[in-house]
Image (tube, rainbow, N blue to C red; front, side, top):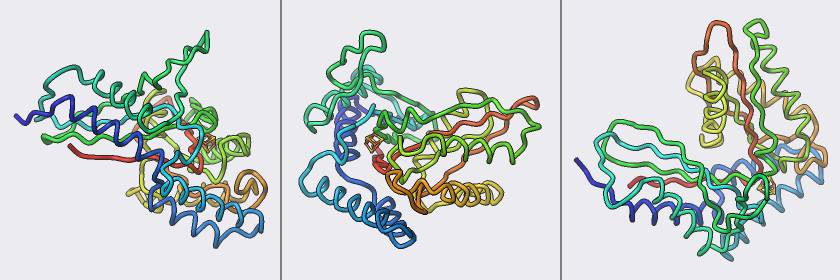
Length: 279
Ligand code: SF4
């Protein structure tokens, strides 16, 4: 059985926390280019230019692309043939977040819910663990800002609402969110499962590279239709009006109970950050 030491996990999480906050992905930068081309509003076009300039400054001057460096959401796909050695798996991830946010000069945004006292090191991380075949570990760090995370919802729709009901609710929700999640946004939609699964698959939908469609043609068609509907809202970049409110709509769908039709929407902002590594 292959061994993975907790020190390697900590070092990897630390590095990913810093990289995710400094380096916007190529897929997002390309989506900015496409957005700038397609945007009809002059102000909207200029905002796309500013977003690209912001990403360049973050990359070259090694500063966070946004002051809200988010809660550290960490997805782990752990190969079932791997054995973690040298300590506690969860603590290794928290330590990586602690070190990454300290050494990367990233804002610490985690606090006690009632007293609002800052935990001072951006822990605890939010850890989602999946067991998968193999003997490796894939770690993805996706810092999530408060402004966009606040614009999330889970709706226990009914089967009679149908796909039309789902479309209506997603569009209504993005409209209600308006400029709060710092558009242009990426809309993660989770359909099916149970209450908590819907939310998780909506968040996982945000990890898919921009421009990549769902493999199921029916779901891919829904993504395309939702993107057109959302972009017809006219919210535009930074909410100042325009054609491009969303860079993409990603839908994940799984089976649900015969009496249910769960729907979750998790919006991400233009600081669409995530970095991954395999150890
Ligand atoms: S929503 Fe995103 S871009 Fe806006 S402040 Fe928060 S992290 Fe930054």
